[in-house]
Image (tube, rainbow, N blue to C red):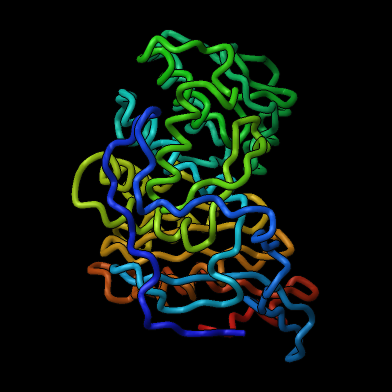
Length: 367
C-alpha cells in the first residue's frame, strides 16, 4: 500500500561530535524490545514490477520512505520504520566516524573509504595509497578476499601473467569492494594509536565511534548487531532512520558531514565505478549522496536535506536503479540546480530483454 504523509516524522537530529563515553541524547529513540520487533516481510508492498510483452511477469516487494528537508515524510510505501540491516549503505556514516577521529585524506581517497567499489585498477591503486600513507600494506587488510565486481577488471585480474602486491589471480582483500573502507579503518587506527589487529572487534574504539555516529544521525539506538559480509560489525537501524542520516550528510552546510558529502558527490567514480547506478545518479544530480547496500538496501540524500531510503524484500539488484531514480524524483531531484534529468531517467531505464532486444521494462508504480 502506498501512503503519502504530510505530518512530520522525528526531525533529523543534530550532529554534534559524538564520543564513546557521551550520554545518549534525548533525540535518540531507545532500542525496541523483542516484542516490538518487526521483520522486513511485514507490511511489504510493491516497489517495482517487471513487464514483459505488456504483462506483469514478476513483482518486487519492499519498503520505501521519502523525507523532506524538515524530516517530514513525503512518501511511504510499506513500513517506513521497519528495522533493517543497512549493509554497505552505512559506509558514509562509517567514513564520518573515521574523519571525526583524525583520518585526513584527499577527497578522491575519502570517497573510496565510503565506497563499495568495482575493484577497477584505479580503485585498487587508491586503496594502496590510503594504506601507504599510514605506513601499511595490503597484508594489513582483514576484510574478506574476493574478486573485482567489475567484469573486465576481474578478467584482467585472473589473466595477469605476474602477481603484484595483492594483484591476482585469485580472490584477495584488496579486490573486495569494501577494501577502501578497511584501509580507512586501519589508517584511522594508526592516527589514534589504536590496535590494528582487532579493528573489526565490536568493542574496538573505532567500532564504538561508528555505532555512536549511526545512533546520532539516524536518531535510533541500534537494536541488533551482527557481522557484515566484509567482516566489519554491522548495526541495525530503521529505514526512516537511514533516510534521516543521508539527509543530514547531504544537507550539511559544513563540518565533517559536509566533507564526506563533497568527497562522494564530486568523485562518484570512486564510490562505485563503471556502470554502477550510484555513480551514474551522482553524476546526474549535483550534490547527491547515494550509497547502495547488499540485499536490496539503498540510501540517498539531496543537498537540501531531502532523502530517500528503500529495502527490496527479495534482496535482488534488478529493480534498484528504477526505484532509485523514481524515489529521487519524488524527493525533488528535478529542482536541484544543474540536474541532468535525462541522465537520471536513463539510470531508471531498466529494460527486460528477449532475444537480445528490449521487450519490456522494470516499472515503478509511484513514478
